[in-house]
Amino acid sequence: MSLESIKYKRGALEILDQLLLPIQTRYVKVQGVEDGWKVINRMQVRGAPAIAIVGCLSLAVELLKNEYTDKKDMRQEIEGKLNYLVSARPTAVNIKLAADELINLANNLCADENVTANDFKEMFIKNIENMLIKDIEDNKEIGKYGCEAILNGLEGDGLVRILTHCNTGSLATAGYGTALGVIRALHTNKRLEHVYCTETRPYNQGARLTAYELVHEKIPGTLIVDSMVSALMHARNISAVVVGADRVAANGDTANKIGTYQIAIVAKHHNVPFYVAAPLTSIDMSLTSGDRIKIEERPDREMTHIGEHRIAAPGISCWNPAFDVTPASLITGIITEKGVFRPDKLKEIVPH
Ligand code: MRU
Image 1 (cartoon, helix red, strand yellow):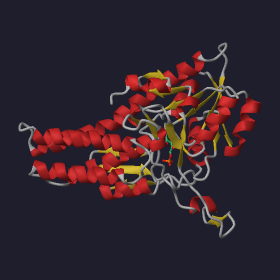
Image 2: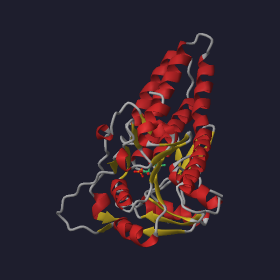
Image 3: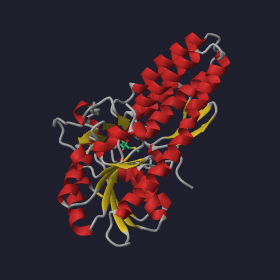
Image 4: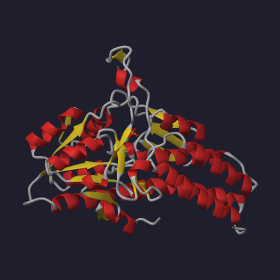
């Protein structure tokens, strides 16, 4: 069975604490918006789609507990809480887009005279619950399209060797995964020879989460340190790179986990196709280019320590941006649930 990062049934939400993986498997209860904000901010849950889904479900759990007689009060509360959840982490756009859509829905339900306060609550919660189903469906489509694109670009009908970065599997989504979904689809179709995953310093999402998922799913994989990417491309005849995204600007520039940009440069040098796999909810058409994406900077401790052990010289200063922006010119294609697009074609398929 696939790993389950989000356990939800109406009124009860639990997330797999990703800070404890791969050593311990422990679920944490999320009893409302305050808990939702905390598990996102502390990175107990991560990955752009999972952040959005957990944030919105935390609101669904809280709304269910409360009694509302006045629709306007409920609308106002929803808007405030969604904006608060968006503030937990700044770079991934999925939660912001989901919040905007839900605020829109709340405005419409509030204005509709045929909708009672109870109907409002029920329809609103149902809408959030659908995010779980839709994310898995979208990821399966991403897997299918990505698998086709990679195989179409191949000479002959051989097996492929893929490199991926950070974590994009079941743990980072509602299930199946984005970039890891593409890898999963290649594996299911018996076309994957091997996947290489980077350690993903400094937070080690690759070593801790992707490697864990590959082992769990029995997908043939090997872990490398981030600085081995050039050597790997030189030595192992990599067929394609597939990574996820936290925010894609309208011109295709893509913010993803720190280190993605340098992998794209190395891929270009070695003539290896570089794909970004992301649902349309990761595309931010309000930003014309990646220069305007806000990049989260994280504490020095993530670099200076491993667990409780200090590894950096005391007194050294650190710069720790959690994401970088890969220019569209280095991206072969963006794999979405609607197909694979050249970065400069996004404007034609995504509504503004
Ligand atoms: O800081 P994180 O662990 O939330 O960063 C995760 C990533 O950068 C992922 O690659 C991205 O969100 C894609 S998740 C399908």
